[in-house]
Structures are given as C-alpha cells and as structure tokens.
Image (cartoon, rainbow, N blue to C red):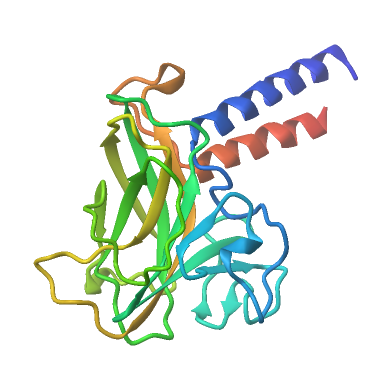
Amino acid sequence: MTAMRWCFFTVFFYYLVAVQAQNLVPNPSFEEFIKLPQKHYNGLGCLKYWRPHNGNCDYYHKQAGWWTGTPRNIFGRQKPHSGNAYAGICVRTTFKEYIEVKLTAPLVQGQTYQIELYVSEAERFTGHIEAIGIYFKENSCWSNDNNALTETPAHTFKLSRSDRPQKNWIHLSAEYIAEGFEKAVLIGYYQDPSSPPHKGYSHLYIDDVSITPLHQLGMKPDAPVESEWARMNQLCQVKKHLQQL
C-alpha cells in the first residue's frame, strides 16, 4: 500500500467512525438482520437492535420472497428509500403497532437533536394514518397492549390525505431539545385528541431513521443537517476514490 493510499484509507476510516457516531439510532435503515423475513414470520425479531413495542410489526428485505420482499410485498409495492430493506407497522381501529430501538447513547439534557425518518403508506389499504408520533423512553420495554399509546409524543408529524405518500417516500424532520432521560425511541401511531378515531386498516413503511445532535463535530447552529443518505453517498465517493488508487 502506497503512502498516498494509506493516507486516504486513514481519512476514510475516521470519516466513517464520525458519520456512524453522529446518528444515535443503530441499524437506521434496517439493513442488519439476524435472519431474512419469511412468509410465516417477518417480525422485527429478524432484525438487530429493533424490536416491536407491541405486536410483531413487519420487516421487508430485497432478498426475501415476494410476501416479505422489496419492492413487492403483501401490503404493496415500494422500493427502499436506501439500501435493501425497511420496516412496517399496522394501524387499525383496535390495533396499533410501534417500533422501538435503544439509542447508542442517552440524549444530553439541553442538547438540540435533529429527528429524521422517511415514511410511505402501503396502497392496499382503506384507511389513512393521520399522524406519526416520536416517543422517547427511559427504558426499552415490550407491551402486550394493542391500543394506541396514551402518552403525549415528543413530536408529532401530521400526514394529510393530500400528501398521502403512496409510491413516494415522505421525509419527516424536526428539532427536539432533550430533557436527559431519553434512552430509547418509539415510532408509531398518534391519535390527535381533536381528530376522530382512526378507521379502516392502514400500513406504514418506515426507513432511514436518525437522531443526531445538531452541533456535533463543530457544526454551526444554523448549518443544514445532512441526511443519513447524503452522508452515505459521501462515503461511497471516498471509497470509490480509494479503489482507484
């Protein structure tokens, strides 16, 4: 290995560590799995780090069969926003699912974080998900309660019918000031008290979840936050340059 190539390799390694350190959500695009999803079971037990808060939730991967694959699966047809996989939650009148993950580090009190994720409603359903909530917990815990969470979420993303994200991914983003207790995050349905109860049967695909401190690595308060997808593109460019040396 030449001195120049070793230099680029070192830069690439430290850049990779820095990028991975920014996002406190492990396995953010659902690429790391224990086993591929199958027709008889495609719950989050197939995944590393992620788990269902209640129910099983769903996991889809390009290498799986059509029932649990991407882009085609039992609930619709959608390409992953990035990589080969994504997760899914079901929402119906008497049943609500939430996905949950323990953060790689607790949030720091007073620190501002950027919350980002991509969602897309499956087309083979009659209902519409009005809002998605981001819930922070001190401890990761499983529940057998299939009802909607009663806690007020840290942030709510409303999804209007006119913006129904069939066939396209919708980017959801918000800033959040931590209180210091947050060690795990839940993502799922939120019932707005001012709206009527959810009716019908809906399914939501979720991909590329990230929670990043805004001022990490010398970032200015007004500087734009790169998405996980943009950062991975940068890594690919660096890797490609290394291979050409």
